[in-house]
Amino acid sequence: MTTQSAATTDSAAVYRAIRWGFVAMFGSGAVIHFVLALTTPRSYHPFADEALFDWVYHGWQNVFMANPTLWALLLAVAELTIAVLLVKSPRAGYLVVIAFHVALMAFGWGFWLWSVPALCFALPAARHTFRTSR
Image (cartoon, rainbow, N blue to C red):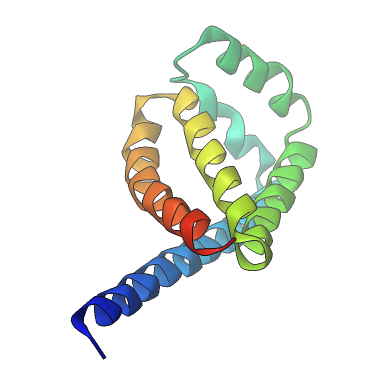
């Protein structure tokens, strides 16, 4: 095995690990939202308190919090769908992962502490996926 093919194999393993990390993250997120929806749906109330835009805060309070159990269950379904997409169609899955994290950033600067590092993993992994799966 040449040095070039070993490096390619190593990078493929890293990107595969990143993808499975996102699968685990979104799969466990789905479980967490399912449990919260059924046990403490009001716990979502302060989520948008630090939103960067007024429309995000008001939308959260007027739409999501109008029926937090329903919306949290839909959020759980969305997160599970993202996990499944990453397994079945990684290209589509990464597009949704990126969109999810960019949208999450509108909820406040604190979410940037999560989203920016997540995007630092998702963007190169998506690029690799788009380059290697045609």
